Length: 132
Image 1 (cartoon, rainbow, N blue to C red):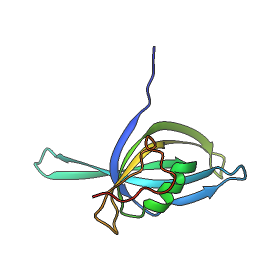
Image 2 (tube, rainbow, N blue to C red):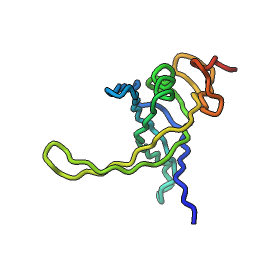
Image 3 (cartoon, helix red, strand yellow):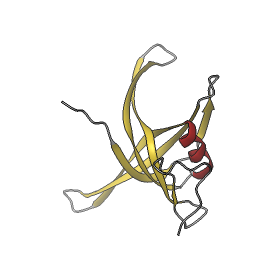
């Protein structure tokens, strides 16, 4: 039997990229993405709930994310769910769910009204040009 871990999200970046470069030369960019869900409560009032997602961009995608995604950027994300277990400073076990980004499209940059496709299927040698 086959298994699949695939996530699609559209949301806004909560802050600029956090960049980490490891001794091995690998690069990781972390970005928090906000998604909203709106529903009508029993009293008829519309309610919006915001969920925050931790995104991990590795190597070439990290380079693009660092250059293109800024606080407020509206982004489409395709990736895989990763569950992680770790110990905090006090030794308590913590769990987190994160997303390893495989592809992304910058739908709207806060500094521009143009979109950018950063899909790995096109594997650009440098940052892609903006498209109308």
